[in-house]
Image 1: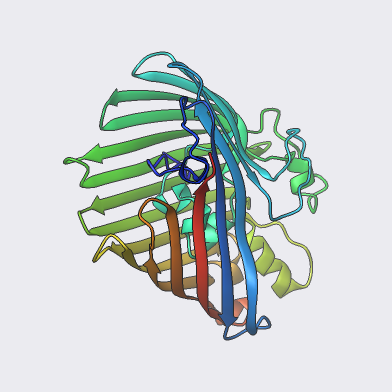
Image 2: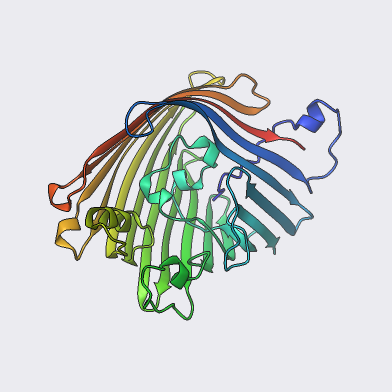
Length: 363
């Protein structure tokens, strides 16, 4: 599990330009940047403009053989302090202690040990996140314990706050909602690396308590076939929620009914497929396709009422192999189909995007 934590051996700008020799791994500084020109073809947002998609400051390092840390902060959105006493701009602020070659523990605000390759990716590398991942927050205050059974299998048990704000504020449309005494979640994660790295896994199961006697179950499975020039990825995301934490169903029901609704007993299912191909080290081609469904299982008009389809293609040029920088030309589309009984209209969103994607290693 990396959560976009690429420790590639690229040369930092301080080494390359200022000729500063680095004698310690205690401080590594990165800027994660994605900036695009987008031409949009349908919907109310039709037209073209430049967009600052992602900008995150990151610092990480190994202080000695036992202690390490990582901090990542999002710069291109306004921050808001939450009840966990962290700004929602802070993705990660984690300290890890490694007992030995097998056992380690980490705490702070961290990426929850969920599975799936799109979930685990650096956000600058994702053309557009699926609906399921847009509806959950993967960064929470908590703790992880990891066990490296061998060089190919690592298991992580995590415990975390289910919401970054208390459930009663999060579900403000339900004034009688009783907050759980312990609004916590737990996840079990397997990171596998089999057949000399050709088959890789990021699998997890998690259980959380949203409010008193209301639970959320997530199954998130990522499987990757990793060949020399080709990579094939299948992600499955499933969520079953007694209170609609994802809120996609709640938003659709509220729009259809003309009043604020918090859905209950909802389910979400997503299957994503990705193909990556590198004909030469300087070029990467990718295709992404997926189907998602959402349901309010106890409401007949909103039972299995929504299907969402994503389709993406990109060609990316890597001009300098000593830097993690790419120019990307992509077509990104999404189609949402509703059943007639729910009263909502189908829609499409399509765009062409020319992007600069750069993980800058400053020091």
